[in-house]
Amino acid sequence: MGAVTAALLAPDRVELTEFDRPSAGPGDMLLEIISVGICGSDKHMYLGHANLEFPVVAGHELVGRVVAMGDDVATASSVVGGPVAIDDRVAITPSTLGCGRCWHCQHVPHKPALCPNRMVYGFTPASREPHLFGGFAQLMFVGPKSNIFRIPDDLSTPRAVLTEPAAVATRAVERAMGTGVPHVGEGLGIGKRVAVLGAGPIGLLAVVALRHAGAGMIIVTDASAPRLALARRMGADVTLNLSEMDDDARLAAARDATDGVGPDVVIEAAGVPAAFEEALAMVRRGGRLVEVGHYFDSGAIQLKPHTVCQKEVDILGVWAYPPIQFETALSLLQRTAAPIDELLSTPLPLAELEEGLRLTGREETVKVVINPGA
Ligand SMILES: [Zn+2]
Ligand SMILES: [Zn+2]
Image (cartoon, rainbow, N blue to C red; front, side, top):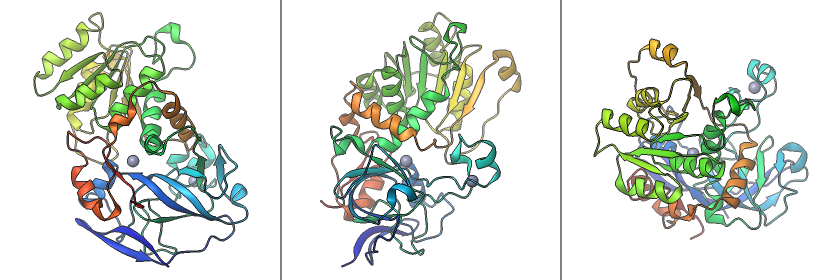
């Protein structure tokens, strides 16, 4: 019996495609996908924005049930929250472990996402054996060097589907944290004032993380009133609607809310180049700007380097996260008081992945979910 996937055969073309069911050799695992979220990057791939070798079984925001396991998974992979057994629910980071040998692995091992030799689930060509490298499928193959996280029993599967985007969001928030000297007024800490630009899944989960981490005032900007209403439900204090206020009015409102100086931290999660410009204009002098919205290249802006000097602003990029960020994400999803279930739409079956991709990014849907077993 094979495994059905919703494979991306070319841009704009998804088809149910069956592959042989692989066996789980030493160090391998087979997961039955219970639930998988659609990421903005899945949509970019579908629209042909990524340089991919088709076909690809996409999907990297997954919760799987272990249905087969080779002997030495615990030594071949990194297992957290384990030990892991048959029938356990797990989340897998999209990236495998760094190679340990390249320049970046040797010199900056705390940033394994910079290793160019990682395999990435959900982006690997399905022409490679054993084909099942993505979450939009009944079954997924998990090989050695994977990062496996056992999902805590008291965390529901719908919430656990948010683990990967919550890892991105918590990483963005933690990038703004200082080096343990909050009294000098740098970076993020209890009571600090933060603006989040963009109320998509990452922006909204950043709000959840900020509230959980003790931030003071949280300001959110977006062009969608329903998204901003959701941002308030997640913990935002002030919301500024781009479709109702011009740039100057938004900057003035952000300053009014922060003693006339601007937020300590601005997190750019909109993925629109102009939002970076706004972030730089909005952040207070001596503040921090975190750029997490641009995994895909969506163009350029003009900026004055003088502003970076004059503001003495720290600008910090985010490129994925170290694997252990999943532990942070799981802890947040388990313990947050925010009604995060409201971020999820009604799950669709695997055959409706294309519909899910169409819905992704619309203002009425934040995180579209596929349940392959449904
Ligand atoms: Zn994602
Ligand atoms: Zn490496």
